[in-house]
Length: 554
Ligand code: ATP
Ligand code: MG
Ligand code: MG
Image 1 (cartoon, rainbow, N blue to C red):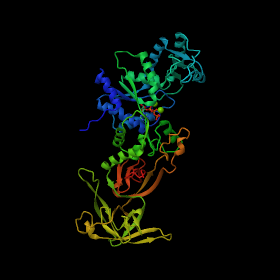
Image 2 (cartoon, protein in one colour):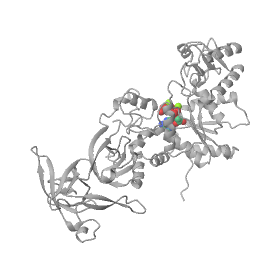
Image 3 (cartoon, rainbow, N blue to C red):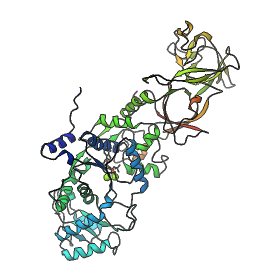
Image 4 (cartoon, protein in one colour):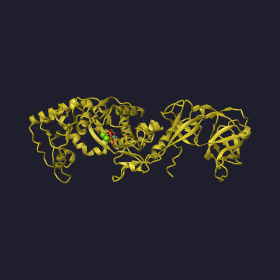
């Protein structure tokens, strides 16, 4: 059997276990901020944390990092829960940083009493000027040496809502000379007179990320707090804050970092995805062109495909761009196994079988999916008039054209061998009908000698009288550039593909008339398609998930 080599995160955990951390003390968390929908980058973090939970039989919390009331909403909380569940993971506890506001406040009082925090009453511009640079020390705030009593009084009045936003902040008293800029007396609390989606108007001071995150990990007794690389310089502050409150009998959480995952031809940043939604470049967070998990689900990507993709790319120590065609490979791989095959014609031209009886109809047997362990079949109606794809016919064709031409034979999938005879054209010379003859003895699966005859190719079709009209939404990349986010000088929206959506009317076989939202199908020879949530019994709507082959690679 294959021995999976350990990634650097697993090595860190195993090292801690070897050094005495007991296995039942392991706990992980996935900590989204509910300020947008989850995207494919988050899927990496979800698969990492919940995957570790499964591997080490350890609980994983879903923690909402909801400390910024200006941007957070219940809609996003609900969407995040739906997406994590859909990906197939179960959290142990559903937690909210906002549930710890009182505890954080109480700890803060203690820190002020210990002389490790002060209220700064300068403008943010003045504080920024005093920050210094990586090569130049900062300058102490004139308020840095306020007495404990004055700090306690001002901080309480901040909490009671006596001051407008921006007039005071609480800062940690660390050092204005620290090499790590984040350690130069970072802000712990700011005043925000904003309604919070969970705590309402109870609070008008809100903790900063660095103060809330490690302490939330500590309260929940998370053993390993994995985050993306941009938090590496925050680790020192994470540890400084823990040092102020840490009780040795408890598990001390450990922050470790891994590289962000970026996907080509899209953006993975909630802020940028929000711009696409709010400025109307797409139709919503779950638009099938979006890199969101909900968009990918609606497009027809499966949870298994996304998990397989995330596990295949694994985790890294350096940021890099993963080609979206790798994700599409895993989508095809999964859909090939699970998607029933059906016939649909998306660019129809009429085919008339001149020697087939006028009023006859046959229900022919068609295999649902050759990948099934036990094969199943359905019936598809056949008649004198069919639709076939316009591209499947050429009047005069090259030798290499393995489809229908005049005077040559092809097989109609699940049906008969036909031979092209003539065409009907309109005044502009466009073909409106193709006339052919069929060989009555050549029916698929009949076992006759005629049915076993080799022909140039097989094409799909639907019977015109039985076909069901459907709207089909065909997508192209949302961005024309491989890395729309890669050039800091150019706005990513410059690279939006103006032709990323094409809406066409096609015809599908009648077995699809009751197709339900999110069902996956392979339209034979065309690609994988998924029923959209706009679909109804009156009007079927499909999204093209992905073609059968990687056509962008060429
Ligand atoms: P965004 O910039 O899209 O808002 P974020 O990191 O601010 O991303 P959070 O809601 O804070 O979003 O993310 C929750 C978790 O998911 C964090 O631990 C974060 O590091 C991780 N994460 C976010 N984006 C990616 C990514 N592209 N690749 C891997 N992990 C990610
Ligand atoms: Mg964040
Ligand atoms: Mg963010």
